[in-house]
Length: 322
Image 1 (cartoon, rainbow, N blue to C red):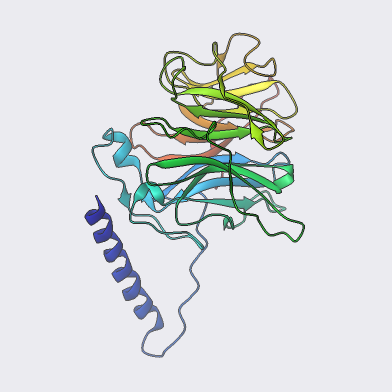
Image 2: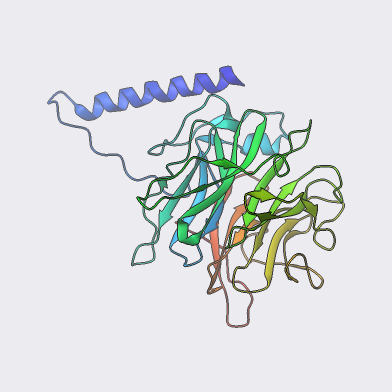
């Protein structure tokens, strides 16, 4: 896998050098600036979207590696180094360590700005992030190699970000084969839902819950049925202004009305025309749009999309964000 990735990187660098030389030409003209890299790219990998409560900031993770071959082969084929570079992206020869979190800001005309690398990214894998406190605090999955930790950082009065704080051994269980992923934190920062396959679950990966007192997080508890089943549950989102809960289960994107902890009633499958496999849903406080990652099970590719809420409460056709 490493040899293949390095070969691809060397080829890409050689091609870039050749293009740079051609652009300058014999007259010594400076090369033209590269066009902005969009949120959705035709190669590489954009995933894990999260929309801010005011709908003005769209977060997502990006890697130059295309994970479609790895997904479609069930892990038998390595991800392919194929995507464009982004400003600030931390590179790695290990596909599973190369991912940074970016944010795009909504312009006055409704389009998105060129994505910006967040300052707390480093040369390990950073993904599955969300903001609270109007963007002044952030929780995400940070890892290197086989170790994956849910961490949190805060922005100071001067605008700079503090160092990531590990949420502790109770949340981040590193027993053999155990993982944690896709954190979702309440607006006050005191309740946390996340995905894990730790012992005590209902099946494969489940949604777990913990609360904070001071700086200490409680022992996580499995939120149980009807959310968790014998299958795999992941990618939880809880409305900060209502009682909607969304997550992904064996039947696809799910929704229910919550009781503050888990479902108060039977879950329903969310139908989004134009996207059969939607995941990692979130929406702004006004509930006008649902943002999600749409997976094509034939090509294995993912695009970040949104769906507008119709007058009858159903969701309109899935539309790429750019």
